[in-house]
Length: 295
Image 1 (cartoon, one colour):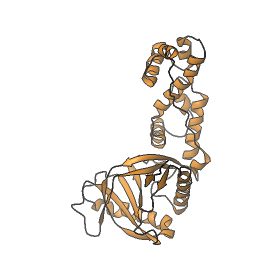
Image 2: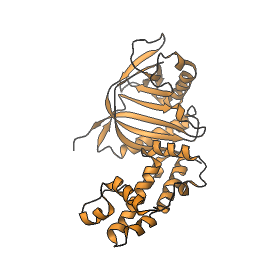
Image 3: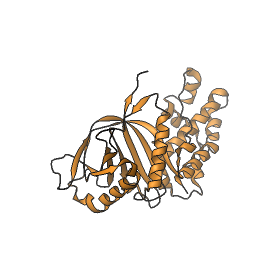
Image 4: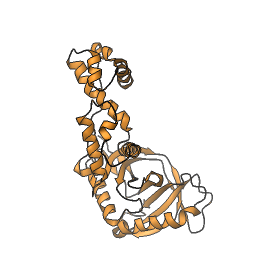
């Protein structure tokens, strides 16, 4: 099943059966193991699946608690909890007060809203999610630099990445993250028709750079980040998939252009954890610096 359809189906099931008693009620018949689905969900939405289900169950129970005079025990059972005390402990962990205190306090309670996927998150059946604002700490990279015409980047950059990962990554000295690929794009001048692309790995320092390799330092920067899940091997980000992905990212960024200015003309990079590939789904993160706009 394509990632977009898979996660959309899961989100719908959670809302339809929000008072379910176990996680398996939401996962039955989905063509993926529970372990892998939990991993995909956490990567896509940034929250553990079990935590999200619990938060949604409690949010729905809160309406019954505040809008009726029903017993807490009855609300707990209807919300999928077998014991009242289990519900009370979960409620207090989520909101900081017990159900009884909530009824008496008159406080506003902030709840976890349902997650949604929309057609704009669909990339040829695969999925891109974001944007998120992320503060990226400074880090160093060592790799092989390529000069690539911008018009050819959707084809040439994946080819360069594949060649580096297959043939050259083992020559990078003391990589900090041996299984994580970084692809850094820098534009020397916005008027140029080409960019520098660096298929690379993160290292602790740039003291030892092998012949034929290039070192680079990404500065500490506030970035906008996106997460991509593809129903394919991480080496199979083809020209069509790359173009569709960047089209989706640009569309999502434009929805927020009143909040910040995207500075991808300076640099941007993708990050792929090759260990996260489970034989079916790959995961990629994409980051570009931003400048906040004055209100």
